[in-house]
Length: 389
Image (cartoon, rainbow, N blue to C red; front, side, top):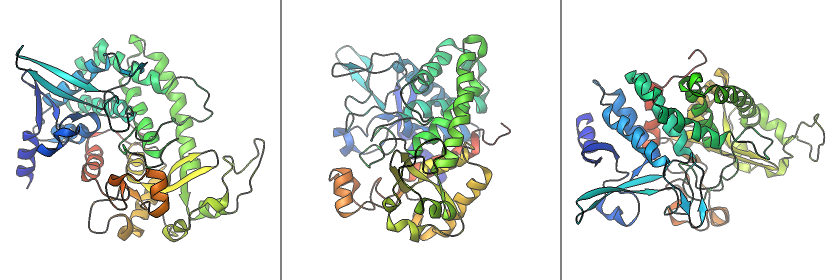
């Protein structure tokens, strides 16, 4: 089975000027009309990790991918008449062959062609995490010391660490900007992006060179991860005790002494939460913003929070306890569901905009995406985690 999997994976390799630079999102001839015949930054991560974990490792494709996407970062990113930030990495790219000039070129998508026209926020974070994995596995410090690699990291960090009006350490995001690349009501501060943000910050802190103008970024990272971890561990955490506390919240509280800091109305707690929450276990809810808490379970955010040590050891154990207690709901006979529960009826129509790919229990809406499940387990084997690293 493993040999067959590698054989199929090798067939999905994409070559540019004779070198492997990524893998196709799907080996399906009917997908040409869409963008599944391209190399997606986020979708390549499990392939890259698998190549690094292989014995002996096959790091060439990972190195080529990192450098090629870094080169694409330097292109002008324009959507209609608006120019995106310098640090934005592409959602995907495709190799085109010009038979007349006998020349290969790259067609790059920064969101201008994507479904929903949304630029990916998570691409830059996955790139930093994969870079850390590559360096840790190969010890190719010469690549890390290259000025363009250091600058690429700093451009990504400049985007997400920039000052603004926000009073929270979390990162403000739009719907469709992450793995859940369709409207699912995750706008605001989705847990997946916050966990990836934290993970990337920790990786970048270990790779930035103070002597190459990285000292300022390292100091900003240290301050941000302290505030971010406190915010997530305190306000995103939900267990039986916290659920009872929220149920008894008072509203319209003012001043620093307020307990209900986000003015959440207790009546907004959905009924399913009371049946879903066991006495043993807990999880990070999907979103926290003024007067709104998204109580849904999201797989990637919770798992990455464990792998990156964003949550405390006790919270990490509680998340796994919850999975065990709600095995039938979250797993059943298939890989872990991306989100739980599924949106149905009027809520589905209102939130997703009648999106047929997000019907209940399919795709992102309560369905499973095996590559994400395997990606997280691959991360566990190669990335640095824990407070001692």
